[in-house]
Length: 151
Figure 1 (tube, rainbow, N blue to C red):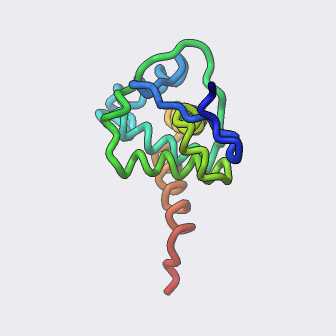
Figure 2: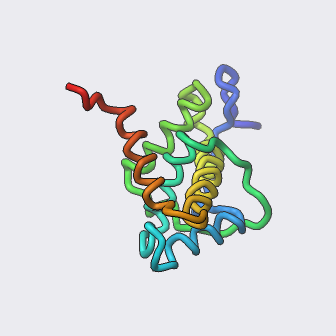
Figure 3: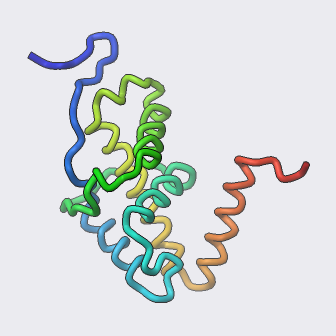
């Protein structure tokens, strides 16, 4: 018998132990945290994951995971705040809070936004010129969308 709620259409599932990315995203993460001239040098992967999630949500959109699955970090490593950011994005994306019943779907949505975000961040890093300056300007513009600095 399925544990699917007839009114919501979401099956009750549990998320996996690990948060995974595809091979290409794993390579992007490794480059961005491993190269000394990267603005993300030595950043914890979990923190870059969260940044890529937000950046992907605002800039690049969702990209389905490609081939290969690699654990980036253990899901229990997420703070309560990080988990609720992930859940909030899924509920907003689906326009239905009942999606929270389906934890596999919640993390799939997050992983797809991260895939888009990390690809965009990597592209900024390897692009000729000052990608860090461009990223900084982009982040400031995103922040201005949240706050009214003209007061």
